[in-house]
Length: 408
Figure (cartoon, rainbow, N blue to C red):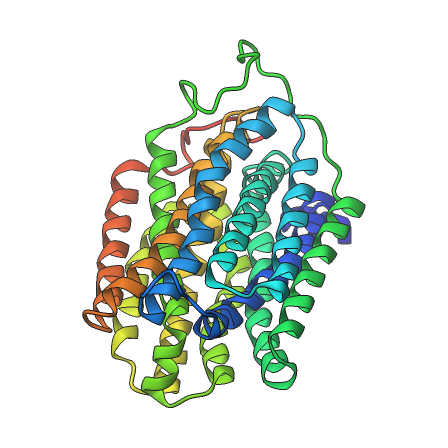
């Protein structure tokens, strides 16, 4: 009975193993969401005479940019090798090393170098993990499986900043960096122990040499889904670059900012799995479109929040919007991905997410110098544009004569 219920909900060993591993590394990485802006503000910067908000935005954006550039390469490499697990482990070890090495950093330039290392690490893990998820699930349960995976990630992302706030206030920066690195290593240990990496199936006529792109990999629907993850990530990542400014404007502590920041993840994790399962039954595209539309006002109003309570409520709204976007988007991509090419095609969608994580903080750090509300208003407009792109370019894959590969 339990086995049948697990299968109906999209649960299998691979899904549970990757989801549990994702929880560990998400806690480790999200600790930096809170600590990094505070750390940047204290570091000497003899070479760059930039406002603190701009320097924070650059540090946060560099990670996303390197990740976005590296993900298509990692996806293509995993397709060519036919193995995903070694790349996931290598990426997690790079992230752990980069997080621990913050304890040795003495200048802003060194910190940027570690952000590059962390970006390379996450580039190796994200498309390869989702490629395993895609090949290990079927269309009938893929939304629920992606919901479980992203829910576990959200638990990690929600608890990391809260843990970081407690560690920073009680023990200082180094304790947060050590604990963060430890959780990433825990994720690597879970992958090594629990994840079974089956060789990717050979595809007739597939090229023998390494190719980053080839006909049939970069498609209009995949680009549309990449646009959805880009606008989602850009919208909810802007706030992180302006931690110091929010704390000053609202006269709040670092822990209060952590509570507001984590409110997005808490609201998202409550709805991510139910929405994923619902998308298996009624369709995926409507959730993505409605989520992007809801993200627009939730993001635009962040620039006008006048209290911590308002900030928390708006982050909750962003979390609700993200829950509608994330799991259905990844499930749609899995439905449409070509057998044996999951690494490269899922990388298109995850690259959009990485670019969003890069673009959002950089936009906030630069435009907030002109007007604090300006980057958030622009982020809301981008969300509406993303909804239009999805409506125009992405097909539905649930019910009827849905396109994509067989639901085997």
